[in-house]
Amino acid sequence: MGERTMKTMLTKRHLFLTACCLALGGAAVPETALAAAPEIQVAAARMPAQQLADLRRDVARARTAEPRSFAAVSKIVALAPEADARARARKAPIALYVAKLGPSALMPALEMLAFSFPRDVPAAAAPALRRDLIEAVGLLHDKRSLAVLSAILDDPAEEVETTRTVSEAIARIGNDEAATRLLAALASSGSGDRTRAILAGMGECRRANVVEALAARLRTASDDATARVTARSLGRAGNAWAWKTMPERGEEAQIREVAARALVEAFVRHVGEARGAASNALMVVDAPQTPALIAEARKSAAPEVQKALDGLAARFARNPTRIDVGGR
Image 1 (cartoon, rainbow, N blue to C red):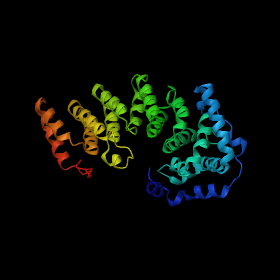
Image 2 (image 1 turned 90 degrees about the vertical axis):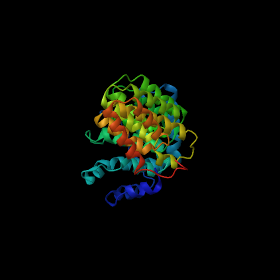
Image 3 (image 1 turned 135 degrees about the vertical axis):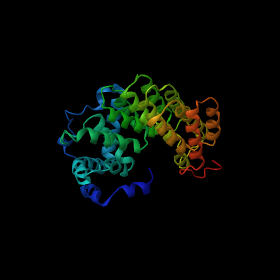
Image 4 (image 1 turned 30 degrees about the vertical axis):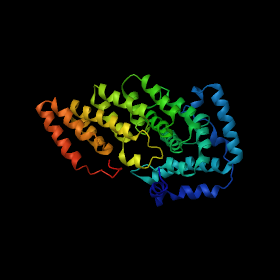
């Protein structure tokens, strides 16, 4: 996420968090604040011994080099329930506050997720705050977080919302290992809510093998809920706007075409919200092959589906999301 977007989301009623973090200076984090909360299972329970040893070493080094960052993250976490209360109908963007601190926030966040989730967080707020930390780690795009995030992703006992958040966090890291871990988790997830949670997060991973897996899932989706979630993820993965900001665009054309092909097929096969999700995703992907794919699908479609495809073609022709991406 860009600097401008982050600044926009840091609304005035939440700025007190940043001020408190700065005021802390180099203050030490109380040991009681780092004791494991009984309501929250830390990731260390599912991590191999060597990964744990490596992480403990990295955390210790970071604490010596950047004590202010540990204090700042601890203070943000401590004040998160108050920030949420002030946000009223909305939730305070705690993940953005943490990520805004920059790379030095990584080890403090990983320490809380892996070893010592704060004990003094109200029980009702703890699960959402844990997801905030997971999201923040993903926003930092650091491959060193994969061991912790994968331990959370691979836990079938996790809440569905947490599984979605950690899937998205891993997807944002976006390297080969991240893609491999997502695909392995998807393959072992079976079906149902856990599978849909993983699929929902995968759209942030703009890698060809991940998008191929999403397309395959959409083609075989037998229920509208899975089709809807997967269509939306394909829309995110192939998003023409997002690709404009990517530093590496070698797989863009392939990914957008794969997404468009699967989405047109889903539009034909499904109705209702799933069809609507496929239509919306096609607008966002805006692949140049889309008109031809619609025309091809129309040849063998039933009359009522042909009519729907005609409407889709007309909508695509005046696509309100379209941008100039080098001749599309």
